[in-house]
Image 1 (cartoon, rainbow over the protein chains, first blue to last red):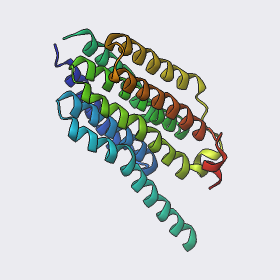
Image 2 (image 1 turned 90 degrees about the vertical axis):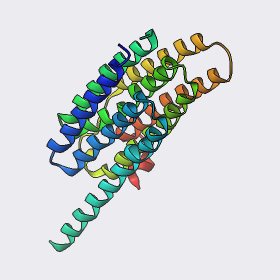
Image 3 (image 1 turned 180 degrees about the vertical axis):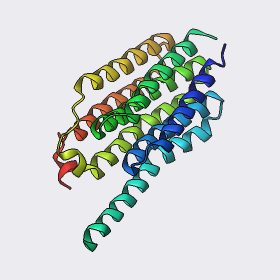
Image 4 (image 1 turned 120 degrees about the vertical axis):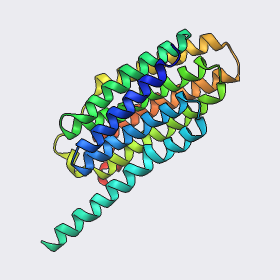
Length: 83
Length: 150
């Protein structure tokens, strides 16, 4: 019965990862990726790996979306200048 | 399986499932709000897991999440200013519902733990979580001029 947490976390990870692939707009993808990072951290905690979860929180929750959004912004600006 | 783990399963499954649905569908304003609100159930789930596994050190994870979750949302609020300026997201009801969930869980855990240093840590997590959530929500709806203007 104690595995229920792991099962729920695994289902959430599978769901959010699938959604991250299916969403095509990079900005919305960044939002899904932020949620995926948090869900992955929960999964790592459920399987008793809090150190991995700690780094996953820092990278997945804030850094990945920041990098993606900065890249999207730069690409959009360059497109605007060419026109 | 003890009651804390059951509560954690329910909070994580229900709360994160709902935010996953919110972030997967609908207009951009709804997705941003859902991303902001994903911090609250995850953080409360983590402190419930710490209590369920009887490992007080796991509360550190919730502390880090309570600090970094609003930072992630502020990144979106800052870099999506143009997209959100036309119709700013308003989510006062769900924001306060998430804050109420966090407050209820933290208070229940404080009662279970009893007065000690762990209680102070739990209260700090709760205060950071609720404060960060409310601030990030205000930033998203354009309430903070510095985020919008810069």
